[in-house]
Amino acid sequence: MKLENKIMLITYADSMGKNINELHSILKKYYSKEIGGVHILPFFPSSADRGFAPICYDKVDDTFGTFEDIEKLGEDYYLMFDFMVNHISSQSEYFQDYLKNKEKSEYKDFFINYKDFWENGEPTQEQVDLIYKRKPRAPYIEAKFADGSCEKVWCTFCEQQIDLDVSKEKTRAFIKETLENMCRHGAAVIRLDAFAYAIKKADTSCFFIEPDIWDLLYDIENIVKQNGGEILPEIHEHYTIPMKIADKGFWIYDFALPVLVLHALYNHTGKYLKNWLEKCPMKQFTTLDTHDGIGIVDVKDLLPNEEIEKVKEQMYCQGANVKKIYSSEAYNNLDIYQVNTTYYSALGNNDDAYLLARAIQFFAPGIPQVYYVGLLAGTNDIALMERTKNGRDINRHYYTMDDVKNEQERDVVKKLKELMQLRNTHPAFNIDGEIFIETNDENLVIVRSYGDDKITLQANLSNYSFKIC
Image (tube, rainbow, N blue to C red; front, side):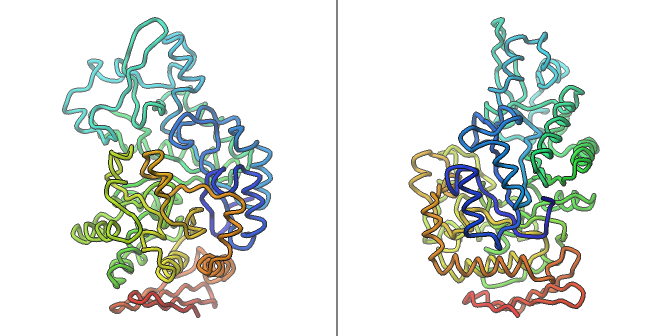
């Protein structure tokens, strides 16, 4: 199916039911009207990071099912797949062949060897300091080759995620083949994970390097569009960068909305939320929650610095077991830009506040995405997080088919489903429509219109009551 202006679910293949078939069964039974699309988080064989260290893209992890199962799901819902344009697993045949055969490997051009990249084989401290990095040192691993030698190979994220050299013809051919294969198996949208890290140049930040990054995006877009799909570049950064991407005509994420909505509900004012809703584009996907944490860097300069610090502390102070430590290195993260919590728990497990947050999201410009834990108004999974020591697992609960069935009886889930049906069916939410926002103290009004159709959200940000008319 092609991309539609209907709510997209974000889920792992084994988080609502144990595999793709069970997920499909759940959606058909309980969410046929509420969900129009599904972003299946990486379902390929992977060696780390819950799928984001792909070993290959030409098969589905056996635990989840087959491409046939994916294609059947795609008959009922438009689908989004992940492509990790920046890296591939260290366990992939490509990197393993490189370790075995080194310069004789047919895949040697896939990877960035420090001795070839840097003028003197190593970066200077000044060059290291320039790099926008996820590690406290230069981004590399010590690759141990079959001949006994060791060399530094570029690695931005964890040691299982080896960076690809997208400047090389061999790598570009791999990218093209992978994207075409994804489209053949039903991808309506391909999400480009960590794409901003893909271009590396000495004496730069190696992050969102212009104009090269545009050449990469346009090349990828051309491949995908020729095969009937769309692309969605994923980036957590200052809001001006996604806006720049939107100005080029690409779909973007609205990662600023989650914190702005929390600030509005915590502090009973729509001032900053209004400013953002009036400037953000319609051609975007909105989120409140994702498989990662709630992004803080995304609201820099959309909230004053003191308000950003305040809203972070307000999240930590919720009676929902949100603690600073869960976003720290102690829990296997360097999530200095994110807070780890479910959105429902960030609002103190308050049904009224949560439903108002979703109503605001659904009235905001763009196509809403709802994460599977948020779909079921899930609370923080402290037990899973303590077991794995991964702060993000606080928001990655596993639901069985019976669990999903039981959750349907909760009032908050029933009311959320009603809101979702409304968002999917009312013509005023057309992407080519208009939005009007008015705020006065704790009162917030959002009007969506398209042609002669209009729908209005009237909300009180203090007591969380709202009506739609």
